[in-house]
Length: 369
Image (cartoon, rainbow, N blue to C red; front, side, top):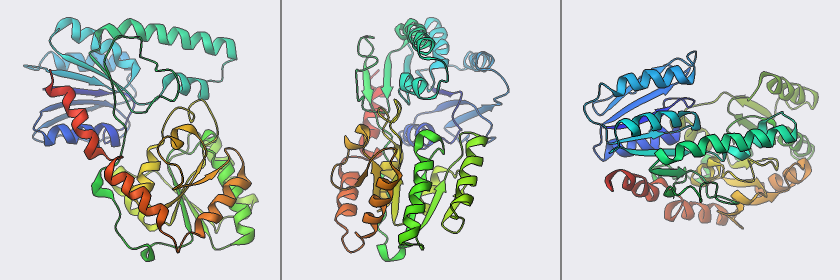
Protein backbone atom coordinates (compact mmCIF):
# COMPACT_ATOMS: atom_id res chain seq x y z
CA UNK A 1 0.00 0.00 0.00
CA UNK A 2 1.30 3.46 -0.95
CA UNK A 3 0.10 6.33 1.25
CA UNK A 4 -0.20 9.80 -0.26
CA UNK A 5 -1.05 12.79 1.94
CA UNK A 6 -1.80 16.45 1.22
CA UNK A 7 -3.07 19.12 3.61
CA UNK A 8 -3.53 22.11 1.28
CA UNK A 9 -4.20 20.93 -2.28
CA UNK A 10 -7.61 20.00 -3.72
CA UNK A 11 -8.10 16.22 -3.92
CA UNK A 12 -8.07 16.24 -7.73
CA UNK A 13 -4.90 18.33 -7.88
CA UNK A 14 -3.32 18.12 -11.31
CA UNK A 15 0.10 16.92 -10.11
CA UNK A 16 -0.89 14.78 -7.13
CA UNK A 17 -3.96 13.05 -8.51
CA UNK A 18 -4.04 13.31 -12.31
CA UNK A 19 -0.35 12.60 -12.80
CA UNK A 20 1.15 10.79 -9.81
CA UNK A 21 -1.76 8.80 -8.37
CA UNK A 22 -3.19 7.90 -11.77
CA UNK A 23 0.26 6.73 -12.89
CA UNK A 24 0.62 4.54 -9.80
CA UNK A 25 -2.85 3.06 -10.33
CA UNK A 26 -2.06 2.38 -13.98
CA UNK A 27 0.94 0.39 -12.76
CA UNK A 28 -1.31 -1.58 -10.40
CA UNK A 29 -0.43 -0.03 -7.03
CA UNK A 30 -3.03 0.31 -4.26
CA UNK A 31 -3.26 3.84 -2.83
CA UNK A 32 -4.41 5.15 0.52
CA UNK A 33 -5.01 8.86 -0.16
CA UNK A 34 -5.66 11.52 2.51
CA UNK A 35 -6.51 15.16 1.82
CA UNK A 36 -7.54 18.21 3.82
CA UNK A 37 -9.56 20.42 1.52
CA UNK A 38 -12.72 22.49 1.21
CA UNK A 39 -13.53 20.58 -1.97
CA UNK A 40 -15.81 17.74 -0.95
CA UNK A 41 -15.16 14.80 -3.25
CA UNK A 42 -14.46 11.13 -2.97
CA UNK A 43 -11.95 9.77 -5.50
CA UNK A 44 -12.12 6.22 -4.18
CA UNK A 45 -11.94 3.35 -6.68
CA UNK A 46 -11.02 -0.31 -6.46
CA UNK A 47 -7.34 0.72 -6.07
CA UNK A 48 -7.73 4.11 -4.37
CA UNK A 49 -9.03 4.53 -0.84
CA UNK A 50 -9.57 8.28 -0.47
CA UNK A 51 -10.60 10.21 2.64
CA UNK A 52 -10.96 13.99 2.68
CA UNK A 53 -11.00 16.05 5.89
CA UNK A 54 -12.39 19.53 6.43
CA UNK A 55 -9.86 22.40 6.43
CA UNK A 56 -11.54 23.52 9.66
CA UNK A 57 -9.34 21.05 11.52
CA UNK A 58 -5.74 22.20 11.93
CA UNK A 59 -2.81 20.37 10.33
CA UNK A 60 -1.73 18.67 13.58
CA UNK A 61 -5.20 17.28 14.12
CA UNK A 62 -5.28 16.18 10.49
CA UNK A 63 -2.00 14.29 10.95
CA UNK A 64 -3.37 12.63 14.09
CA UNK A 65 -6.40 11.44 12.11
CA UNK A 66 -4.21 10.14 9.29
CA UNK A 67 -1.95 8.32 11.74
CA UNK A 68 -4.93 6.60 13.31
CA UNK A 69 -5.93 5.35 9.86
CA UNK A 70 -2.41 4.23 8.99
CA UNK A 71 -2.22 2.04 12.09
CA UNK A 72 -5.15 0.07 10.72
CA UNK A 73 -3.43 -0.75 7.43
CA UNK A 74 -1.90 -4.22 7.10
CA UNK A 75 1.18 -3.10 5.19
CA UNK A 76 2.62 0.23 4.01
CA UNK A 77 5.46 0.31 1.48
CA UNK A 78 5.75 4.09 1.02
CA UNK A 79 4.42 7.42 2.26
CA UNK A 80 4.55 10.53 0.07
CA UNK A 81 3.75 14.00 1.44
CA UNK A 82 3.15 17.22 -0.50
CA UNK A 83 3.68 19.94 2.10
CA UNK A 84 6.47 20.87 4.51
CA UNK A 85 3.95 20.95 7.37
CA UNK A 86 3.50 17.18 7.01
CA UNK A 87 7.13 16.27 7.73
CA UNK A 88 6.24 15.21 11.32
CA UNK A 89 3.98 12.57 9.74
CA UNK A 90 7.00 11.07 7.98
CA UNK A 91 9.06 11.14 11.18
CA UNK A 92 6.41 9.36 13.20
CA UNK A 93 5.85 6.62 10.66
CA UNK A 94 9.51 6.13 9.71
CA UNK A 95 10.30 5.70 13.40
CA UNK A 96 7.46 3.20 13.76
CA UNK A 97 8.06 1.38 10.45
CA UNK A 98 11.73 1.75 9.40
CA UNK A 99 11.19 -0.25 6.18
CA UNK A 100 8.86 2.29 4.56
CA UNK A 101 10.02 4.53 1.71
CA UNK A 102 9.41 8.16 2.75
CA UNK A 103 9.02 10.74 -0.03
CA UNK A 104 8.90 14.53 0.31
CA UNK A 105 7.47 16.23 -2.81
CA UNK A 106 8.46 19.91 -2.85
CA UNK A 107 6.05 21.67 -5.21
CA UNK A 108 7.54 25.17 -4.96
CA UNK A 109 10.69 26.88 -3.75
CA UNK A 110 9.54 27.63 -0.21
CA UNK A 111 12.11 30.34 0.51
CA UNK A 112 11.13 32.20 -2.66
CA UNK A 113 7.46 31.74 -1.82
CA UNK A 114 7.94 33.27 1.64
CA UNK A 115 10.09 36.13 0.33
CA UNK A 116 7.40 36.97 -2.22
CA UNK A 117 4.32 36.91 0.00
CA UNK A 118 5.49 37.70 3.53
CA UNK A 119 4.60 41.23 4.67
CA UNK A 120 7.12 41.17 7.51
CA UNK A 121 10.04 43.59 7.61
CA UNK A 122 13.26 42.33 5.97
CA UNK A 123 15.32 41.27 9.03
CA UNK A 124 12.41 39.43 10.63
CA UNK A 125 11.53 37.77 7.31
CA UNK A 126 15.07 36.40 6.92
CA UNK A 127 15.18 35.20 10.52
CA UNK A 128 11.92 33.32 10.02
CA UNK A 129 13.22 31.78 6.77
CA UNK A 130 16.32 30.59 8.62
CA UNK A 131 14.20 29.08 11.41
CA UNK A 132 11.91 27.38 8.89
CA UNK A 133 14.90 25.87 7.08
CA UNK A 134 16.41 24.71 10.35
CA UNK A 135 13.14 23.12 11.47
CA UNK A 136 12.79 21.40 8.09
CA UNK A 137 16.39 20.10 8.29
CA UNK A 138 15.61 18.29 11.56
CA UNK A 139 13.08 16.12 9.73
CA UNK A 140 15.09 15.37 6.58
CA UNK A 141 16.88 12.43 8.23
CA UNK A 142 13.50 10.67 8.13
CA UNK A 143 13.16 11.31 4.37
CA UNK A 144 14.39 8.74 1.83
CA UNK A 145 13.64 10.72 -1.33
CA UNK A 146 13.06 14.37 -2.21
CA UNK A 147 11.15 15.26 -5.38
CA UNK A 148 11.44 18.76 -6.83
CA UNK A 149 8.83 20.02 -9.30
CA UNK A 150 11.15 22.74 -10.63
CA UNK A 151 14.68 22.83 -11.97
CA UNK A 152 16.52 25.01 -9.42
CA UNK A 153 17.53 28.39 -10.87
CA UNK A 154 19.91 29.14 -7.99
CA UNK A 155 21.67 27.11 -5.28
CA UNK A 156 20.06 23.72 -4.77
CA UNK A 157 18.19 24.05 -1.48
CA UNK A 158 18.59 20.38 -0.52
CA UNK A 159 21.99 19.59 -2.02
CA UNK A 160 23.66 19.39 1.39
CA UNK A 161 20.92 17.33 3.02
CA UNK A 162 22.34 13.99 1.92
CA UNK A 163 18.87 12.92 0.73
CA UNK A 164 18.59 11.70 -2.90
CA UNK A 165 16.86 14.24 -5.14
CA UNK A 166 14.83 13.72 -8.31
CA UNK A 167 13.53 16.61 -10.43
CA UNK A 168 10.15 15.60 -11.83
CA UNK A 169 8.48 18.54 -13.54
CA UNK A 170 4.74 19.00 -13.88
CA UNK A 171 4.64 18.49 -17.65
CA UNK A 172 1.37 17.73 -19.50
CA UNK A 173 0.48 14.33 -20.87
CA UNK A 174 0.99 13.88 -24.60
CA UNK A 175 -2.68 13.02 -25.02
CA UNK A 176 -3.45 16.74 -24.58
CA UNK A 177 -1.49 17.80 -27.66
CA UNK A 178 -3.96 19.78 -29.71
CA UNK A 179 -4.12 18.76 -33.36
CA UNK A 180 -7.17 20.91 -34.15
CA UNK A 181 -6.70 23.27 -37.09
CA UNK A 182 -5.87 26.86 -36.14
CA UNK A 183 -8.84 27.96 -38.24
CA UNK A 184 -11.12 26.56 -35.52
CA UNK A 185 -9.71 28.92 -32.87
CA UNK A 186 -11.01 32.41 -32.06
CA UNK A 187 -8.45 34.36 -34.06
CA UNK A 188 -8.25 37.44 -31.85
CA UNK A 189 -8.43 35.95 -28.38
CA UNK A 190 -5.90 35.84 -25.54
CA UNK A 191 -6.04 33.55 -22.51
CA UNK A 192 -4.37 33.66 -19.11
CA UNK A 193 -5.02 30.87 -16.63
CA UNK A 194 -3.78 30.29 -13.12
CA UNK A 195 -3.80 32.22 -9.87
CA UNK A 196 -4.90 35.84 -10.16
CA UNK A 197 -2.63 37.87 -7.89
CA UNK A 198 -0.44 40.99 -8.06
CA UNK A 199 2.80 39.00 -8.51
CA UNK A 200 1.34 37.36 -11.62
CA UNK A 201 1.31 40.70 -13.47
CA UNK A 202 -2.46 40.75 -13.88
CA UNK A 203 -2.67 44.56 -13.52
CA UNK A 204 0.07 44.91 -16.14
CA UNK A 205 -1.93 42.63 -18.43
CA UNK A 206 -5.12 44.65 -17.99
CA UNK A 207 -3.20 47.86 -18.73
CA UNK A 208 -1.71 46.15 -21.79
CA UNK A 209 -5.25 45.43 -23.01
CA UNK A 210 -5.94 49.18 -22.91
CA UNK A 211 -2.96 49.79 -25.21
CA UNK A 212 -4.13 46.99 -27.50
CA UNK A 213 -7.70 48.30 -27.52
CA UNK A 214 -6.59 51.58 -29.12
CA UNK A 215 -5.09 49.66 -32.06
CA UNK A 216 -7.28 46.58 -32.36
CA UNK A 217 -10.52 46.93 -30.32
CA UNK A 218 -11.82 43.47 -31.27
CA UNK A 219 -9.11 41.54 -29.39
CA UNK A 220 -10.41 39.85 -26.22
CA UNK A 221 -8.77 38.46 -23.07
CA UNK A 222 -10.01 35.61 -20.89
CA UNK A 223 -8.70 35.56 -17.30
CA UNK A 224 -9.25 32.04 -15.99
CA UNK A 225 -8.59 31.27 -12.33
CA UNK A 226 -9.24 32.24 -8.74
CA UNK A 227 -8.26 35.58 -7.22
CA UNK A 228 -5.72 35.43 -4.42
CA UNK A 229 -7.68 37.99 -2.35
CA UNK A 230 -11.08 39.67 -2.48
CA UNK A 231 -9.38 43.08 -2.47
CA UNK A 232 -7.36 42.25 -5.57
CA UNK A 233 -10.52 40.96 -7.26
CA UNK A 234 -12.15 44.35 -6.62
CA UNK A 235 -9.04 46.15 -7.90
CA UNK A 236 -9.16 44.30 -11.20
CA UNK A 237 -12.90 44.82 -11.62
CA UNK A 238 -12.42 48.54 -11.00
CA UNK A 239 -9.55 48.70 -13.51
CA UNK A 240 -11.63 46.97 -16.17
CA UNK A 241 -14.44 49.44 -15.57
CA UNK A 242 -12.24 52.56 -15.45
CA UNK A 243 -10.34 51.57 -18.61
CA UNK A 244 -13.60 50.79 -20.41
CA UNK A 245 -12.59 47.19 -21.13
CA UNK A 246 -15.78 45.39 -20.08
CA UNK A 247 -16.32 44.19 -23.66
CA UNK A 248 -12.73 43.00 -24.04
CA UNK A 249 -12.00 41.13 -20.79
CA UNK A 250 -13.98 38.21 -19.41
CA UNK A 251 -13.38 36.60 -16.00
CA UNK A 252 -13.82 32.82 -15.73
CA UNK A 253 -13.72 31.04 -12.37
CA UNK A 254 -11.09 28.38 -11.78
CA UNK A 255 -11.91 25.17 -13.63
CA UNK A 256 -10.69 21.62 -13.11
CA UNK A 257 -7.60 20.34 -14.90
CA UNK A 258 -9.71 18.18 -17.22
CA UNK A 259 -11.74 21.20 -18.39
CA UNK A 260 -8.98 23.76 -18.93
CA UNK A 261 -7.91 22.14 -22.21
CA UNK A 262 -11.17 22.93 -23.97
CA UNK A 263 -10.81 26.58 -22.98
CA UNK A 264 -7.16 26.79 -24.07
CA UNK A 265 -7.92 25.15 -27.40
CA UNK A 266 -10.47 27.85 -28.25
CA UNK A 267 -7.96 30.71 -27.96
CA UNK A 268 -5.15 31.72 -30.26
CA UNK A 269 -2.65 33.39 -27.88
CA UNK A 270 -1.60 32.45 -24.35
CA UNK A 271 0.05 34.97 -22.04
CA UNK A 272 2.27 34.65 -18.95
CA UNK A 273 2.70 38.26 -17.71
CA UNK A 274 4.53 37.53 -14.45
CA UNK A 275 6.33 40.28 -12.56
CA UNK A 276 9.90 39.73 -11.42
CA UNK A 277 9.70 38.35 -7.86
CA UNK A 278 11.73 35.81 -5.86
CA UNK A 279 9.06 33.22 -6.69
CA UNK A 280 8.79 33.86 -10.45
CA UNK A 281 12.59 33.85 -10.70
CA UNK A 282 12.63 30.29 -9.31
CA UNK A 283 9.45 28.43 -10.28
CA UNK A 284 8.58 27.24 -13.77
CA UNK A 285 4.90 27.95 -14.61
CA UNK A 286 3.02 24.77 -15.54
CA UNK A 287 0.81 26.89 -17.78
CA UNK A 288 3.74 27.39 -20.17
CA UNK A 289 3.71 23.72 -21.17
CA UNK A 290 -0.08 23.54 -21.30
CA UNK A 291 -0.12 26.50 -23.71
CA UNK A 292 2.61 24.86 -25.79
CA UNK A 293 0.59 21.63 -25.99
CA UNK A 294 -2.58 23.55 -26.89
CA UNK A 295 -1.03 25.10 -29.99
CA UNK A 296 -1.09 28.71 -28.82
CA UNK A 297 1.20 31.54 -29.79
CA UNK A 298 2.78 32.44 -26.44
CA UNK A 299 3.73 35.79 -24.90
CA UNK A 300 5.80 35.60 -21.72
CA UNK A 301 7.76 38.02 -19.62
CA UNK A 302 11.47 37.30 -19.79
CA UNK A 303 12.22 35.32 -16.63
CA UNK A 304 14.90 32.66 -16.18
CA UNK A 305 12.64 29.64 -15.41
CA UNK A 306 10.76 30.19 -18.69
CA UNK A 307 13.92 30.91 -20.69
CA UNK A 308 15.36 27.62 -19.44
CA UNK A 309 12.80 25.69 -21.51
CA UNK A 310 12.07 27.91 -24.55
CA UNK A 311 14.00 30.47 -26.53
CA UNK A 312 12.85 31.84 -29.88
CA UNK A 313 9.45 30.11 -30.02
CA UNK A 314 7.71 32.61 -27.71
CA UNK A 315 7.27 36.39 -27.83
CA UNK A 316 9.19 38.00 -24.97
CA UNK A 317 8.11 41.02 -22.93
CA UNK A 318 9.70 43.01 -20.11
CA UNK A 319 8.38 42.05 -16.64
CA UNK A 320 6.25 44.81 -15.13
CA UNK A 321 6.03 46.78 -18.41
CA UNK A 322 2.46 46.88 -19.73
CA UNK A 323 3.47 48.55 -23.01
CA UNK A 324 6.06 45.85 -23.69
CA UNK A 325 3.45 43.16 -22.97
CA UNK A 326 0.98 44.90 -25.32
CA UNK A 327 3.57 45.10 -28.11
CA UNK A 328 4.46 41.42 -27.71
CA UNK A 329 0.78 40.44 -27.82
CA UNK A 330 0.16 42.47 -30.96
CA UNK A 331 3.24 40.92 -32.54
CA UNK A 332 1.93 37.46 -31.69
CA UNK A 333 -1.24 38.09 -33.70
CA UNK A 334 0.87 38.97 -36.73
CA UNK A 335 2.18 35.38 -36.65
CA UNK A 336 -1.15 33.97 -37.78
CA UNK A 337 0.21 32.97 -41.21
CA UNK A 338 3.35 31.41 -39.74
CA UNK A 339 2.88 28.39 -37.49
CA UNK A 340 6.60 27.89 -36.88
CA UNK A 341 6.46 28.78 -33.17
CA UNK A 342 3.50 26.50 -32.57
CA UNK A 343 5.09 23.56 -34.40
CA UNK A 344 8.36 23.98 -32.53
CA UNK A 345 6.62 24.18 -29.13
CA UNK A 346 4.42 21.17 -29.83
CA UNK A 347 7.45 19.16 -30.92
CA UNK A 348 9.17 20.08 -27.63
CA UNK A 349 6.14 18.74 -25.75
CA UNK A 350 6.03 15.61 -27.89
CA UNK A 351 9.73 14.83 -27.52
CA UNK A 352 10.83 16.30 -24.17
CA UNK A 353 8.38 18.17 -21.95
CA UNK A 354 5.67 15.60 -21.31
CA UNK A 355 4.54 13.52 -18.34
CA UNK A 356 4.80 10.33 -20.38
CA UNK A 357 8.59 10.78 -20.27
CA UNK A 358 8.63 11.73 -16.57
CA UNK A 359 6.22 9.02 -15.43
CA UNK A 360 8.87 6.28 -15.45
CA UNK A 361 11.19 8.49 -13.38
CA UNK A 362 8.41 8.93 -10.81
CA UNK A 363 7.41 5.24 -10.72
CA UNK A 364 11.04 4.16 -10.29
CA UNK A 365 11.00 5.70 -6.78
CA UNK A 366 8.56 3.02 -5.72
CA UNK A 367 9.78 -0.14 -7.40
CA UNK A 368 13.46 0.47 -6.70
CA UNK A 369 12.97 -0.19 -2.98
